[in-house]
Amino acid sequence: MSADITKAVIDHHVTALLAGDIDAVMADYTEDWVLISNLGGVVKGLAAIRAMIAAAGEFPGFEETAARIEGELGTPRGR
Image 1: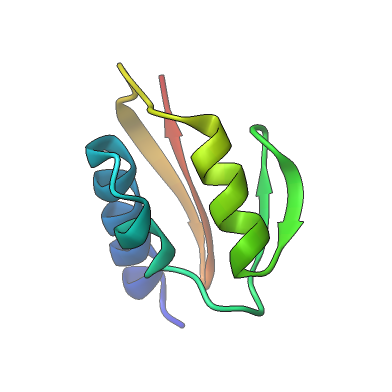
Image 2: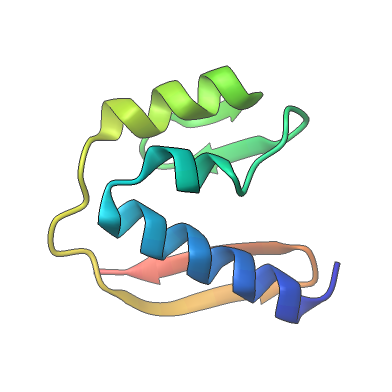
């Protein structure tokens, strides 16, 4: 996966999170994903990722200030 594709996925993900659209967020994942987050540690698979995102609730005031992209790996940075 190219860095451009990774950035597009991150952009979609952040937009969906801010909209509170968990179904749109989940469209970014497949069953073999592993998500590492300060919100829920390390979670694996669609059910665990959905549960972690749902438990985190809304993200009021989040503003993406940068994204770290390394090929197919990436993370949004915000405040």
